[in-house]
Length: 172
Image (cartoon, rainbow, N blue to C red; front, top):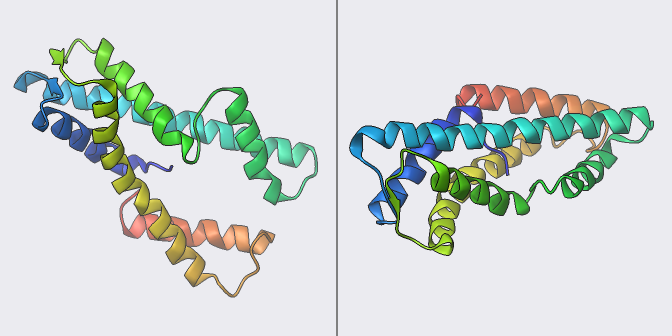
């Protein structure tokens, strides 16, 4: 799951609105912004740790003189070792973190819902925004289909085109 920095405030607002609207949590109107900021902080921390994990995996690939294609497996191994969720496990990991944030936040008056109800509401919002990543990936791959995947040229061009698309859609 990839969360774009530019989308995090919107995701946090939608999660808060969804939970309040469904009656899962009670937040006084003057504290809604604070709850959004609590959720944002948790999502930003997930992104920071995810980037850090990817960099460590790339460093290990480089240090071991492995092909770039090993990065994903090494990243998964590191994530499993640190009990950090990536891929499909990312949803449960992030949601677990968000529930903890809500439980300990001084800005949330009361939580009325069970954890599974909170999870369902949050997962709906997160999946909607995670779809952005899949769409971007499809667009990038369509634009660079003439290059062989896994080659250095492909990786460089993929990052360049992805950066251009993110900029044009203001997702940076």
